[in-house]
Image (cartoon, rainbow, N blue to C red; front, side, top):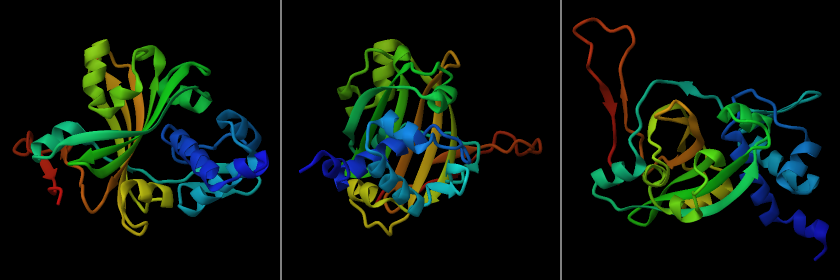
Length: 258
């Protein structure tokens, strides 16, 4: 098979999609992607392969092409204040065995968008990990994580196979103390649906997060896609403009994993 055909194969397109999705994890809604030539060099794929990957993401509603302007992150984010429990802790609370399976793990260099999101310098090293979160061995969520290497240089692939928060605290004394997050309802891509072992028509919840540590440093960006038929995010919310009698009350929404 020639190089051009191999680079434009379905597997190459899927890999290109995953890398663009990792980039989307740190882009704001309405932010423009790098140009096709720059982005193809950045992620190391042929322009035709990248074009196919971008077209599929446009079809999935994750990107928007604006003629004469470029391609932009499209997924709207619903603003809300909430507290998310650790996935591992939540699964244990529900009597399930948590687990992870790493789909891909690599080092890369931050482009301007990633650097701005993580408040680091362009070209600084980052970890990019895509992993499945499991409950009793069944796929529950698909995560894409981006972490500055300088904050946790000793991380290895096996650290992502369990609780990452525990690995960060054990190896580097880092505790996640704050998360800025947004939630949207999505239909999964064909590739993501296959990883989650669901039909592509099944709805999912997408959570985009920026985690900060106890020193106020941005530790990671994360994009998490949860199966809508097996998992509903548990959250605590407190209204900003409460009456005195309402202060301290919390609103909680939860549904047990079936």
